[in-house]
Image (cartoon, rainbow, N blue to C red):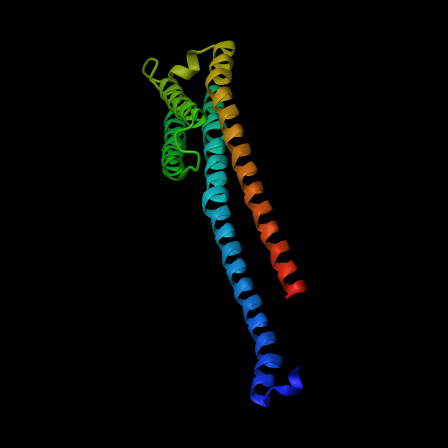
Length: 195
């Protein structure tokens, strides 16, 4: 059949079709690589940054500010130092929480609304603890250990549980993005093998 065709037509058939197939595979490869880049951007922007914010908030409210309070309660820190340290931690936590609220992927879900309320309760609790009790002491100093531990467990503990759930949600969503990226890689590999 090819013997009956002119040479330019034969060249087009023998060289053009494989080149067109190669160009199609390359175009598909480029498109899939673009999609994969978008998945990695989504993974970073929507999940890794949110995860970082949640972990920072958890550290600031559960560790840094609470450590300053405990140092004051045991007599290892002065009143002014404690107030400054706790307020600095709370201000940073508020700024990070606000940033998280503006970019969170699940919007106004029940969990996010509950975490918003719990965050406000935690801030209020710290502010109550920092209220003056007399001329040279803070309210936190006059609380007995059982009251302090109960308040800590109720406010900070429930907020910590919500943060852990939000963190797990971010990890699950990131895992879904990773699976999507893996599927694209398999599709690209098949295109290379069959192309």
